[in-house]
Amino acid sequence: MRITKLGHACVRIQTGGGVVVVDPGVFTDASALEGADAVLITHEHADHVHPEHLRASDAPIWTIAAVERLLREQAPDVAERVTVVRPGDRLDIAGASVEVVGEKHAVIHPDYDRFDNSGYLVTVGEDAVYHPGDALTAPGRPVDVLLAPVSAPWLKVSEAVDFVREVAAPTSLGIHDRVYSDIGLDMVATHMANLLPDGQAFERREPGQDL
Image (tube, rainbow, N blue to C red; front, side, top):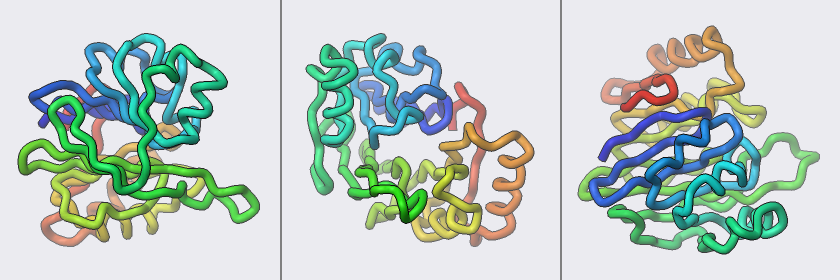
């Protein structure tokens, strides 16, 4: 399995049997979808799903009902390629086994309605990588790589650290990072280095770089 960090929350996972792209939103270059065999989308916010990017590919899309509704309204041609998933579903996609994890977006503010969100646990052979979307919902099983959100209106650094500790992956790769400056991201990396226990490493990559 090869993991490439792309813009913001988007990653590209090469499974050996194909290419899976997760959350190609507006902060991600449309080229992220080149050669994609499957697309997974965690929720409806624009930094995770962008209809024009999806039009640049003919890859099938798996996502939750809220995203399917959005695409039906904004891009019905894209919606034709969508398969709706639900928490607990297990899928075989592009050479990977995928489990749908979680149901709700993290709380931005109590006065907002809650959004739906499901993460994806992608397993190839004995290797597992987990993308939680915009939530701090643990996968419920050991993983090799956690794609760890590090900056958001719904997140503070202590929560990011505690989530990484809870999942306890040997390697965590920072994602959801576009809204922080380089100075802010350096601060996150410093806190992770100071606070994670032995056996857990936090990694930062620029868009286009592999883990």
